[in-house]
Image (cartoon, rainbow, N blue to C red; front, side, top):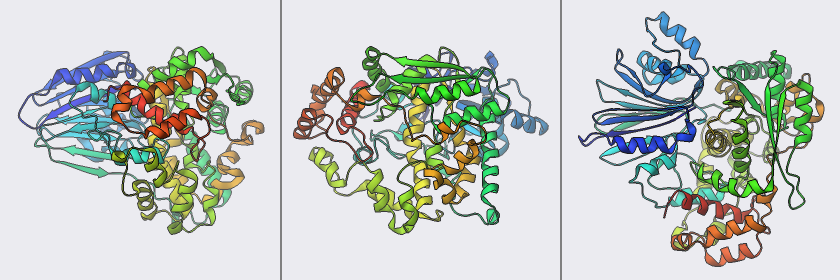
Length: 594
């Protein structure tokens, strides 16, 4: 829901309103319904609106509350905004809209930066205090909604996307070498606060940043799940855990139906999205719109999972839409998907989500999605082998199955000026595993995956690709109360039945077994996984473009060898290594970075 932008000056000059407008305009697809700009001396806010809650003009942004001396811009949805509105009204606050944006402003006035403790939802916001000149930026606990920043001693700029900051100007195209190392280590994940560009940073998830009028700032990390065994649950049986997590998941799904427009479900045919449909049906939802996407087969690999999504759609009687993507639509969609990325993301799922979102947005403005269940409930293959490993010895085991390539292999891919002398990615994982709180190696892996890797890949992927079509995606498996409970749950209950055991048990009484016990699937796009023809030509074009050669990221002999055997070199998790390199160059060129 929406795209926000802004600038705060520290040098006595007025904010550059034109730059703020350019940022907002770059995010038009995120908010096609309305736009707004507000400026007052050294500060200016811009906004693009997707109307989901309070469709009237009273919900427009930037939202100025003259009585409280606050101006706010916001991206996301506060699912408990009605309850908070009642609480704040009882405390004497007067509301002029029915929007969740206004609730954020009032909540900030009441509780200051700790207002975030009261918000259940996905959000990135900026609040400016008229009387002090203070600017406060906040981001939700799981980083579902993005917020990028750049600045110097004279000014700070922020926006919902990195390309919006590029549109404002003044951002160097210099590559962040540590971020590049992470990109090539973690299948495009670049942990916050870094981005692939040295001049741009991300506000980390679960963080509130307070910037004073003189430019000084402080960060407050306000939430982090513990991933250790809580004594309060010491006497719980498996049935107790199943009932508690099932009830918490039901609440999460119900919360995400809050909207003044219709809400559908992205139905892949896997356990996670199918369980969302089942729980909505259990709650009495009828006529639910569901959407699945499929592609033509390539390289001997099927391009759809309709066999499973059709079972769920038929079982629950949904208003189902099967979206079949013809091969001629795929090539142009690659470039459009890349242009929609806030940061380069290598997963071929991006193209699937981009095309799916285009079609879904013709029917609804909001969908629920199953993202996050694998990271929260141990659905990936690298978790079971860690069950018998000590936490302080688990880094090697984790990287062996998760990292794309070794430090030495990364330096063999890059030209010497982009290579690092130290293994920054291993150091990052080592430091993360050493932090207190995770009770076991599995807990430590789930913690880094749910608070870092998930945020910077699947969650970002869904936000970028859906919002590019003015579609808001909501992720019930990332409800913070559900994540907290899942983190406290004994790992064995999550690892059972080949992973996500407790979710499978929750689903068995209410959904078809053939979907619960099926092999793990994904959004397949075979033509990208198996590069040939026009898709290989597009990859070759990006890596041999004069801009790419001038940048000189990748060793010429390595590129030549990869192009000669495009499908022979894959990363640990099976991604095409050539595609990974080409995608980065495509993104840099698309964004005009030279």
